[in-house]
Image 1: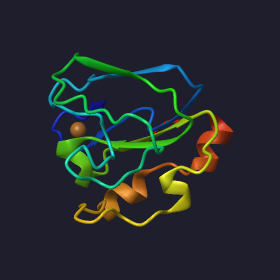
Image 2: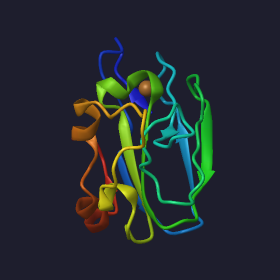
Image 3: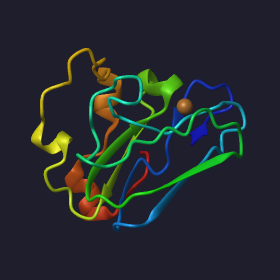
Image 4: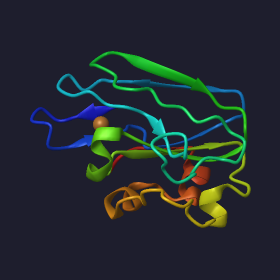
Length: 142
Ligand SMILES: [Cu+2]
């Protein structure tokens, strides 16, 4: 988690990452001036659309102060999209692929659960393409 000095720009770095099943991801807030979250898109997190594999456990780091960190171990294969609660509209989102992308909700473009708040355009634009993550393994912000 990163941000510039006046807080006008915030981001995840890397914003796309490919891992093997069973590996652990750790987010560290390296932004000295802001709190951030790493929150899975899942109905259990504020009734957001499902954008992690069926059967995978959602996570929500809650607010991390500077230098705090949060980790999850991901075992179910597929594509996981996550966001920062206060900065989703600033496009602060990220994507992890565990193993093969398979038939994840974002791939099969299943319909939105009723009552869920759709993603803002700024967030949708920020996800690196699945093919790019598969090809490069890691995608850093431009
Ligand atoms: Cu943030």
